[in-house]
Amino acid sequence: MSAMRIVSFCLLTTGSCLLNSSLHADEAKSIQEKTKEIAGTAEFLRGVPKHSATLKAVDAARRQVTLLIEGETVPKVWPVVPDAEIKIAGWWGRLDQFTLGDRVWLWFKTDRGKQPVAIAMLADEASEQDTHGLGVTLEARDLENHSLRLKPVKGPSRSLRADKVEAFRGTEKAALESFPVSSKVYVQSTGNQARLLLDSVAFEARRAEQKKALRQRWITGGLPGTAAFLHTFSGELDLILDHEAMRWGRSLKPGDKVTLQATPPIAAVVKTVQPWRERTQLRLVVNSFDQAELTVGQRLFLRMPAPTSEVEQAAFPPDLDQPRSKSERIEWFLASIYCTCKVAGDGCTGHFYTLASCNPNACGMPNHMRQIIAGKIDKGLNDRKIFEELLKEQGPDLLRPHLMP
Image 1 (cartoon, helix red, strand yellow):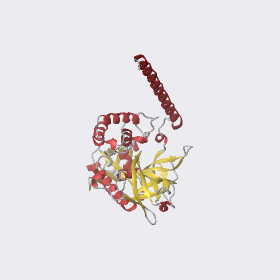
Image 2 (cartoon, helix red, strand yellow):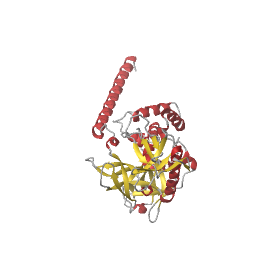
Image 3 (cartoon, one colour):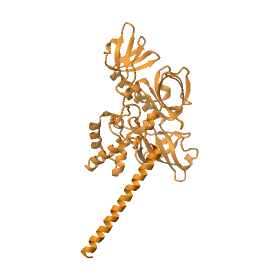
Image 4 (cartoon, helix red, strand yellow):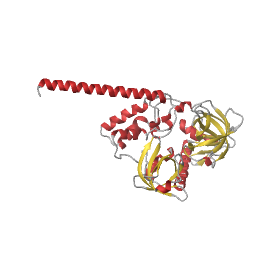
């Protein structure tokens, strides 16, 4: 081929490549614009009604709670959605662990008309204080009149009676005067009365107790999840485990034997495990006839051998450094970390859920972190080293659900 023909061929093919590249870019832009048009650019969590309330009654079997919302005069019964976030002592919990009369914090699930229809998140007061920061500030204490004035990280100061309070510093009961003014504390109140007063060490001890209690429930009752897909002809079942099951669920490996709670129990073998935002997607091999009475959307509980203490206590996820493509690794990281941006308020989904749950049309943080992680992958870093660098750069909120005050 002559030099002239080679040049002409190169120009033609280059032009074709440039044209194709331009077409692909235009197509991607069009898809992005269509996505924004439908999905919108606002974070859904920003519009979710959030309230404090007094817990009047709990029907755990029916998944109902009776709440007196602050500012209202009549208590009302509300259903609790099956996969609601339930928080006790800074950890996940169960409805039967709440104390009646306590002040709680809740998020409503709304309908398309933005009207509240159910409870999507319910937390005791100390869990709310932990979510928004490191407790509340003890502004003043009146020992003579047995009262406290507390400044939360958001909202006005509150005055509470403290004549019946149980106060703890570390694991020991303590006198009210032993809590320094301006120190950070965790408080659980009942009406205008402080019921519990904890320093940070005492709160962490309560969290450790709650972790232990819930661990036992996972062992005996199983991890909560939802049947996402049933294929009786292939003998496969997709189960989406709840947020609380992240660590245990992702410690499973293909070939592991598990059991679904039923009468009689359903034996299954793990085929695949992968994160799905803050949840965990399991594909299970199940006898086809054992699926006959199951339905898509059904709540199921998965029993598995408890992971080792190393898995439970490790800072990072148990499925580090497994074979994945570059794009799969990036998305795995986003499903394993929480957003650390400084946007204040209760509007950022990726603060309370993983960064993979953020609306990328509303926030640049997901794609920003994708670029950072991609750069670290290109440097040849393994997952553990990338996690270590991210933790050093972003801080401890990277690894826990939280909200910025």
